[in-house]
Length: 392
Image (cartoon, rainbow, N blue to C red; front, side, top):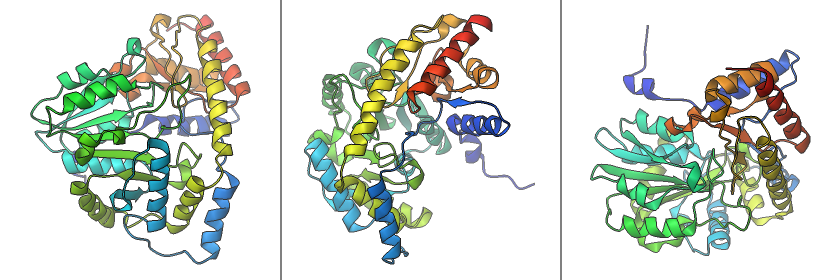
């Protein structure tokens, strides 16, 4: 029997897709399943974006594009970056990617190896740790604590840096917690990083527009002192409800952009042309659909939090960003993953156990707000009935 090399034994998964598959299977069997697990907007891509892709196809844009993306698409990213961060960047520093994960992989692949440490948020997006382990580096979790609003602590993060640290991964607004790190903590972190010039930074800013209650996203691009070692991940998936289009972008320092372009040539050649024209339309076109989606997520996160706090043994802080809540279920007596499994199989509610997001995720579950108010109310009512009547 042919087997892959040992490095492939170290690849993890994103369990949200496994939960989605099981929820779909149960639904196909006739079960009434409410999915609060998957992390994608429940809105359609706005019509003008779809039409831009159709027009590109009809206009004959059927061929390869440059490995780093069409110049027009990269220029659109520059315009969008200037409008959201106030920072001017060059299209030469931009990579158009087939989603957000390739940027994670590229950064971790370039900077991780045996003997290297990579710091990542925990609880955090599971692919960070999976890829760190795959390349043979040592994953070092940076705690995201409930008492801090699931924001990172600059002093705690800096205390974890050693001479072996190669890369620090940051994510705010955050998946799975909805945490938003205050600018004061980011200021302190950047100041402390001056003592560690050997450490690169990957800032995952895919939820940058999704902040609430007067919070504002602070982009790491606003700190020129770290620009020569900063990689910024962003994209179209969340903001414009384009998860299935597989469209992302990233901004790279001059010392790394050539390497990531060559990796693209070797791995995926380029991003498909029609999607890139859709991406331009998303950035430059009307944003009213985005505004409506954010209004819905704002309303739903407050609804979710209120309802969750009414459940026995459950407490939930109000998320400040993204479209997730991360309730504490430790007082229910359930472990997180068995609870998530039982809720899906017995109550017809799909959500994700906290340990799927890291070793510090025990005692929590992730609830996506990307469903209708009606379904959210129905799902959390089912959760309440389950917790009242079913013991661990």
